[in-house]
Amino acid sequence: MQALKGFQKTWLRGRAHDIKPVVFIGQKGLSPSVIEAVADAIETHELIKVKFLDFKDKQQKQTIAQTISEQTGSELVGMIGHMAIFFRQHPEPEKQKVRLPDRAK
Image (cartoon, rainbow, N blue to C red; front, side):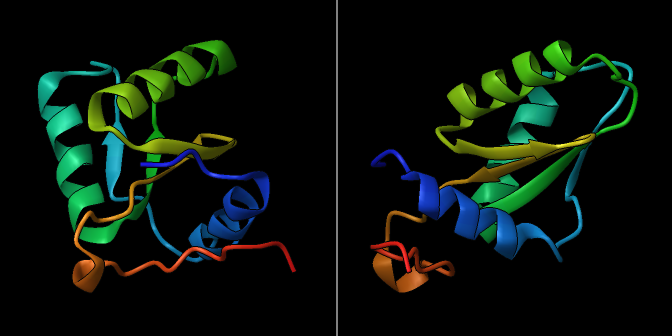
């Protein structure tokens, strides 16, 4: 996947505003089952939110989000409070749900 441009990330954050988190990361942290759940959710929805329940340290959340991004092949679109937003476009054009803008407005 080609790296997202700044205006595309902004657009995706706007689209993610009304969606609910689909994966929750609790006190046990990042496990293979959490990575699998995130990968499955991204495969289905393309744009998802992940909520951190028991992590208060910003650096710790950033590290976990980066690991999720690397292991799922997705891109971290943004972090707002205890939420991380991830995006990975479906490789098959007919199954793509999110159409990224190709230029800033």
